[in-house]
Structures are given as structure tokens and as C-alpha cells.
Image (cartoon, rainbow, N blue to C red; front, side):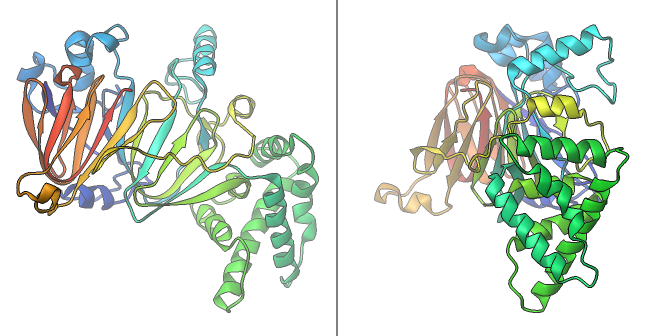
Length: 427
């Protein structure tokens, strides 16, 4: 069954006022539009266009609750939940530094907080459900900037050396401001110890040492920008520019310094990141398709006024310096690429067909067709062009800006037309 769905973009302050509307070809709301949610998350479930198809259920969460076998298929009916959430995400400003727990950590943390009697909606609660929350982001904008994973300590020391060089060019050098960071960047647990110190001292500590460090790093980043404007070459210019952007959004936040410990990533359109459990990350700017396991479990690590549980965050974070976790596509056929992270909750298919494909395929005129096989429930959104999507028992027209929920009994889907479609489903 194909069930048309829609939703209203979430108006988080960091959202772009125009990017989602421009992508989907509809009027902007006039306020920030941060995330368009496509799924059954109880906080904002997708609205069903024609409730007569779903026994009167007005949204996906209600339909799944009433009839999980019909909505999810036999393989997922027992859990009675859609295991993934799909989003169009538009970051006009930086999101918080954060990490997500492993399945075991999420289940244990949820049980412990329940036993302690902490209300699910409490501001100081870490675990709002027993699930992990891995995610992928597919860049739709020409560039999508993010922080992702910890750098090698040797590179962090190179950044410190550049900060020292910048400090020496200032009218009022303050090299002692960097000493606390330098002295802790030693040993096997150096990054762990630095993050611990930055968050504890910088969010209510008594010494003020971190506050001084943050203030000085921002000043040195400003000096870097001044020197670059004068024609000088400065190493790590992009990182220092990020420091200035973060300072404008979150003045005095220790996450500004933590950003220098992490990889700064600039995705090109079509590149994908996979963010597994324990990976520290923050989206900075850009438009993308995000697919994640359906969970609310976020451990914040700065760039946010919200609750930060330093002890729990340190348990969850993976401090090992690793390469940027790009996720390569598994090509299926011309115009079809599938992104399969090593998790059981979701995968993402990208279908893209040029408007003139019908004139070039096999030398014959006609409507180009692409196929993707479902093994679980799916959600598709068209971001360009128009397709007729046909399954085993029915079909639907899908044009730019439209989205659809697909039950797994439709099996192999044929996309006939041209444009671009993203399809989230289970592996």
C-alpha cells in the first residue's frame, strides 16, 4: 500500500528560513524551518493524507499503534514501531555537540533512570527510550559542514602551535591562557582528560581557567581572520573561522574549544557521513537528508544551554582518533545508489534520473525506469521531478515536495520518470 504523508517543519532556532521550502517547491513559513520529520516519532508523526486508507488513523504513529501488521509487515509488527526516522534537515546555524549511546548503554540507562523515578520529560534526563540512535546525513547543498569525531592528538598540538604563533602577534600576548590545554594533552587519555576538564570547569567550575582559554581562543581566531584579510597565510584557517561562528552563536561555551579537538568536515553534494554510537558530532550548516534510528537519546557535549551530564557523556564517547566516517554507496544500477550503514535499523536509497535519460538508454525513446526492492516498510520523498512509483499491488504518482509511506508487501518498487527520490527503509 502507498499512503501519502506530509508534515510541518520543526521551527528550531538554528533552522534555515528558506532551504527546505526551496528544495520542496513550497512557500516558506516566514520563520526558521529546521527539520521536516517523515516517520512515526510520537513527537511529530507524519500526517496521513487520506485516513480512509488506514482505518481512520490520522497519522503514522496512530496507524502503527492500531494495526502494526498492516503498517509494518510481519517482520516488524512484533515491535509495533517504525525503527527509523527520516528528515530533511536545514542548518542555518550550528547544532549542539552531541553523541549517541550504544544499544546496550541505551537500554541500561533507560532502565536505571526509570528505576530512579526520573520523569521521561525531565530536563536532566539522559535516556528517554531504550534505543540507540545511529544516523547518516546525505548532503543536498553544495557544501554541508559538520564536526565529526576526534582528531589525532598530534594534529591538535599543531593547532595549539598555530594558536601560540598567533598569540605572539597580538598587542597583549597571553601565552599562559593555553597552558591548561597543553598540559592536559599528554598521555593515552589526553582527549578524554581535556574534554572532562573543559566541560566541568567551563560549565560552573571555580577556577575560570577554561573561561579564559575560550575567550583567548576566540580572540586568536579573530587575529587569524585579521591577518588573512591582510594577505597572510594561516594554518587551520577554516577551523578558526568555525571558532568565530560558534562564538557568535554560543558565546563563552567550552564547546568552542572542543571544536578544535574534532574533525572539521565539509561534505560536497552527494557525500554521506555515518555517525555511529559514541561519535562526537555537530552539524554546522547546510541542507541534507538525515536518516536515523528512531530514538531521542542524545548526550550533549557543548554548544547548547541544555543539560550536560559530563559523567555519562564521557562513558558514551569514543575518544579514539579515527578517519572521517564517510559512507560509500553500494551501486545497484544506473541512477540508483544504496547507503547501508552497519546497523539493523535503516538504509537509504538515492534514485536520480536525468530528464533526458529516456533518449539515451539503449538508444530507445521511452520513460526511464529504476527499481529498488523493499524488505521492510519504506518512506520516500521526491526532491526533484516526478515519478510514477509502482509496487506489487498498487502505484502512486510522486512529484517534487511529495512524500509517501510504503508497506513492505509492495516488494520491488519501480520508479518511472525523471528527477530525484530518497527512499528510507530497513535492511
